[in-house]
Length: 360
Image (cartoon, rainbow, N blue to C red; front, side, top):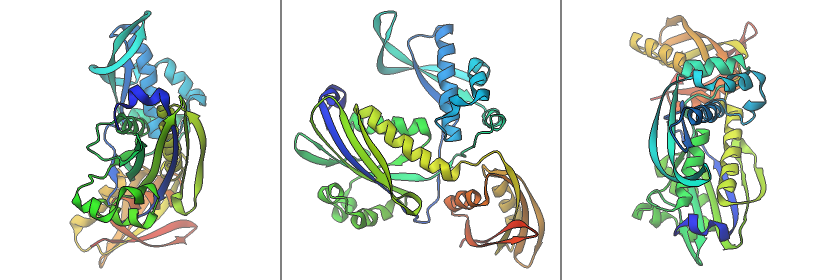
C-alpha cells in the first residue's frame, strides 16, 4: 500500500466495514498483555513517568473494564491522581515515533508498565465497573483497500502502516485480530473483487480454515483529500448495527471502528460487580480427575467468584457457583472456550440452573 504515514494527509478514505459475528465452535483467544500498558514519553524523567503512569493506568482500566467512560467515575478519578502506586514494574523501549518535547522534535520512548490483575480487579469492583476477562473472541479481518487504482487484501505479511495502526488500536482495547495469510488455499477460494464486493458467503467459506469467532470484512478506498470519511456496520449477536459515519484522519477512523467493536463485545462479555448464585450441572464426567479439572476451570473464569462441587454420581456432577454479572454472560463466556456444550437453562429453588455436557 506504500507508506501510509506520508500519504495519509492527502487521503480521502471512504470505508464500508461489515462485521459478521459467526460462531465456528473454536477456542477463544487468550489476550496476552491484558495488564500491560504502553505509553509514548519523551524522556525517562520522573515527571514524564508520572504523566505516563496516569495514561497507562487509564489504558489498562479501559481495556479490562471494556468501558471508555471510566474517567467519569469518581473512584477512578481519585485512583488516577495516585497512578504511580498501582504499577509494580516499568521499563523503557526505543520506538520509531517522534514527538515534540521542549519545543524540539525528539524520538519518543515506549514506557511499559505492568499491573497486578488482582489490584486492577479490586479497583474496578470498588468503582462498580465491569470486568472483561482475558478470554476474548478472535476476529479475522478481510479488508480490501484501493491504492493508486489497484485493489489489495490486507494480509499478515503486509508492511503497510494500515496494518500496524489496526493492530495498535486493537491492542489498546484488548481485541485479538487475525489476518489471512493469502496463500494458494486462500486465493483459490476467494478473490480481491469478492472481498471488495462484500460477498458474505465467499468470505465465510474462506474463513473456515481460521476458525474465528468473528469475521471483520471491509473495503477502503482513497482520493485526494486531507480527511478520512468512513462508515461501517456489523450484525453482532444476530442484528445489524450501524457504526455511523466519521470524517477524520485514518488513525481516528480506525480507532473509532475498534472502539465501537470493543464496546459491543464488552456489553456481552464484561461482567458487572453485582453477584449472584447459579447451579451448573455437567454431564459426561466419568473420572474423578475430570471433576477436579472442571471445578478448576470454573474458578478460572473471569465472572466466577467461587465454585464448589455439590455432588457427583454416575457421570453427573453439580457445582454451586457465585458469579459476577448475569447468567447469560456466563453462558457466552463459557461458549468461547470449547470445553463444555450448552444443553439447556432452567431454574431450581428460584436460582438459575445451567446444564452442560463435556465436549468430545
